[in-house]
Image (cartoon, rainbow, N blue to C red; front, side, top):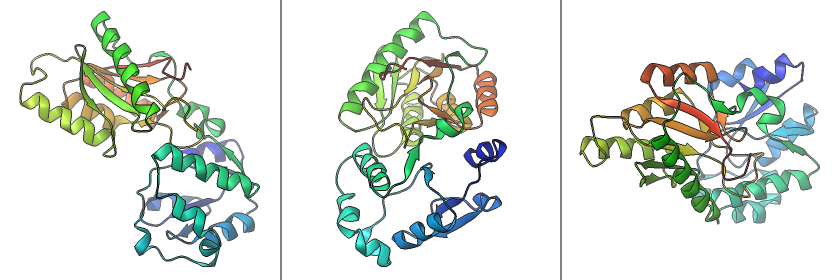
Length: 265
């Protein structure tokens, strides 16, 4: 989606994709595949294609360094790579941004290239949150802010004033599956929709990378968990396939709102 947006603006681009992490669909655009540890090949591809401006986007799993094959470029930066095994996600990603900047690259956020990928302000679908929903939203964002200060997660679920789940290393989808299991057990109520999933960047987060993301699948899992809706930090959360995501919320009767999050956007 980012590449499509860049192409529509007439921006030349080249995608450097990690095997096993990126999907084959990126091959519709000029690209280079690299394996974990092929740092030299990555920089060679950037230089060959005149890439001085970078956007780092997409989720990856932390590799087991014992199974990474380092090329010469990686060996030259080995102390830096080994340092990435420590700290939370934001700590790691901030170091990666600084690493590229020290090499002379300009790192941009996805929203700089494609502002339409960011969630907007206000009610985004047909359903609006009730006063009770708003109270849950307020508490959920407080929880996300507290989590973020510990560099833990970017999402939380609150139902009728009770914190049901917080996001940790397993990610939002797995957290919502846990919420659905709680609903089946009757612990969060089965008959009426209630509660909210809130997503926002961590306070002080390096927002050029690893912005929280939602999509239609998030909506489906929130519906299965019996939630009344989803609230995101407007202008600070990526919304994949916005029209499809909003349609899914409407079809399942969930509210979808963008509001000022912990970062004050």
